[in-house]
Each structure stands twice: as structure tokens, then as C-alpha cells.
Length: 235
Length: 235
Image 1 (tube, each protein chain N blue to C red):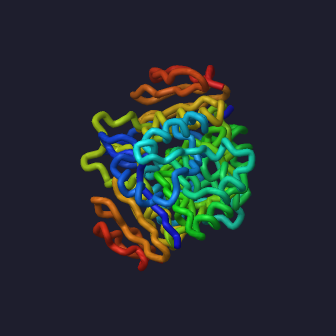
Image 2 (cartoon, rainbow over the protein chains, first blue to last red; image 1 turned 135 degrees about the horizontal axis):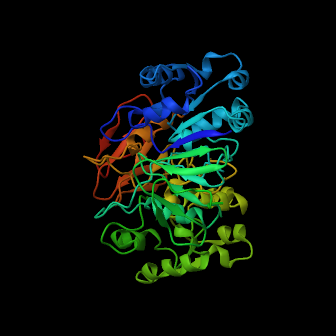
Image 3 (tube, chains in turn orange, yellow; image 1 turned 120 degrees about the vertical axis):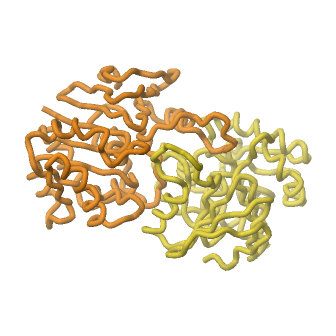
């Protein structure tokens, strides 16, 4: 049975990495002591080694060992043998580019659909949607495609940000950007605020965390949904 | 002689479209009564017709007639016959995609390099750099390449936004994003605040407007430059 956590962010304001979700992760990864970490999104451009080192700390607290995929000669084999997978945040273009370059995307999809527990945060969550086209990141590299894992039949906007009241900035709000997306694409988009996450258990998709999420459907007014709402209607 | 204006935004806070720059535009386009408008960036997803209609108003005030490139059967011929060109803002991915699709990019580059006055705002400015990789826009369509016009030998970040003091949002600041860009690319980037513009006269490139701009060079600390500073050193 599929078991996936798609989190808006790894860190909420004032907290430590993953602390707000650590109890859930203990349960999520209960069948393995070892988690394969995919550091390809390289936040701030740090190396795979540095990023993996950083991620070890929070997982230490729940007695899980983190191994970076870059430590393996063959990343596809590493994915096939993994008992748990975490894809961290950073730049979605860099992440998707590296997944394509290493031909990892199909295998990653396969093992997670076969039941290996997956955790994504930020960029690692964005790729759980149909395409990466609702990322907030800067296109600093050119990936071979924007198509991603499609664990859910919609798109994800992590770090969803409400319009800032009184802002004098003339750049587009997040809501405007997602509305523009719907001029060219028809799949729904979920705006996932920092602290929210989506849980996938088999075929059930549910909003979790303490916050509401904002739903954008093609040719509909955006609307809010409460935590613990099923997202199975979105397609 | 090349004559190019590369503006951060079409509208500054509290103002009307192009009002802050209108006097300069009168001079910039002094040799023509007619300006070819390229509405491909479609802000908010509006149609080419609607967008062109909107842009007519400010240009009316300086007695310039606006004609949309979509009104011509052959956009390449329209570019070759244009006496002045304006590329408006919206979504840079949509703009670049349409320019490639209509095979306009090379001709646009050629006529502007041969001296036809060019105005870009926002997305229309972003494409004046070497690549569109420092856009703030959402990748809602997949263009065939991120390579753009290269009127200046660096990249442009329009609507440059300083970090918001006291923000509780965990998404990357603009500065962090540009630093990430420099993990994968070496060309300089200019962060152009709303109200600033770059003027290109022949081979001279100068910062204009009332504000400072922020310069990001590969492996250097970012720094500020004053208005009226030459940008010829950036390469």
C-alpha cells in the first residue's frame, strides 16, 4: 500500500528541521531503521555531502540512519533496495534535472507506488504532483521536462503564501501566478501552507497539519479546505 | 546605434502604467509614431487583444500608435518592418515559449541590434539578458530553451525585492535564489528594483531611475550601485 507524506516545508518559522512532524515520521518509517536521502535539490547550492550531513540530525532523534543516494555507485539500484525514501527541498529545477540525468524518476515512482514509504518536503513535495509547473523556484538550470512523479492527480504549490496586505511590490501574488497556470493547464493545484502536509495511504489522499489549504481548480473560484479533509475529489 | 530601455516594471506602486518613464519614452521613440507591441507574456493570462488594448492608453498620451504583433499574418515580417518595439510583462515562460514558437527571437535580436528602439518591462526586460534563468515567474509552460536575446552580457532580475525584515516565511529570499543561480552559472546578475531601468546606447550600458541596483557577481559578495553608473564592467 502506498504511504507518502508530502510536506510544504521542512522547517516552520522558529522551529528546527522537521521537528513539527517528527512524531508522524516515526510512525511513517516504522518498518525501517535506514532511510535513503535524495539531496539533489541542493538548497543554497550546498553539496550532496553537506546536505546529507544536515539531514542526519533530526532523524537521529527518532533513531533512523540517513544514507545519501550519492554514496551509491548505482542510484537506481539504491532506490530499488531502499526501505524508506526522503527527498529534501532546495531548487526544484536542480532536483528534477538531476533525477532525469541519473534516470531515477521511473524507478522512484515504481518503488513508492509499490509501498516504500516516501517523505517529500518543499521541492521534494512539488515533484509528487503531475508536473513541477507550480514551483516557486528560480529556473537556474534547464531540465529535460517539467513532468514529475504524479503520486497525486494534481499539482502542488509548497510554501503557499497569502497575499501580503499593504505590500507595495508590483510583482505577482502567488494566487495570480496559479491563476495564470490555469490559463495553460487544467489540473487542480493545492496551495500548501508551511506546516501543512498531504498524507497518501493507498488510494486515500488527506490534508494534514494545523492549517487550512487553498484549492485552485480550473475555471472555479479558489477556496479553502480544512485539515483532515479528503483530497480524493481533486482530479 | 542600439537604443534599448530595460525597465524593472511597467507600473510603480500608486502609479499608472509607464507614467514614471513616459517622458523618457517620448525621446526614446522620437523617430516613429508607431510602435509594434509584443503581448506574448499575457499577464494574468489575458488575450493578446486585451493586452494590446490596455497598452494603447499610456502611449496615446505621447501620441504613439500601438499595433499588436498578433494583428500581422507574418510576425517576422512585422518585426523587420517595425520602427519601434515594446515587449510587455507577464509570464516570462509564456513569452519565451511564444517567441520560439513563432521563430521571432533571431529577427527581434537582429533588428534591435541594428538600431530599432526597444522597450522591455518586467518579462520583456528579463529576455534582454543572456538567459531567462533569473526570472521570478512560475514555469507554467515549457519553452524549448532558456536562452534569450543577450542585449546585455549579464542576466536580469526584474522586480528585485529586498529581504522582508521580520518575515516568518521560510521560502527563499530573492538574494538566496540568485546565489543558488551562481552555483550553476557564472554570468553577473543585476537585481533591478521597481522604478529602475537600464539604458543601452550603442555599446554603453547605464543604470537609470531614482534607485540603486544590486549586483551579483560569481564568487563575490553582492553590492549596490548608484543610478547613472555605467554597467559596462559587468561581463
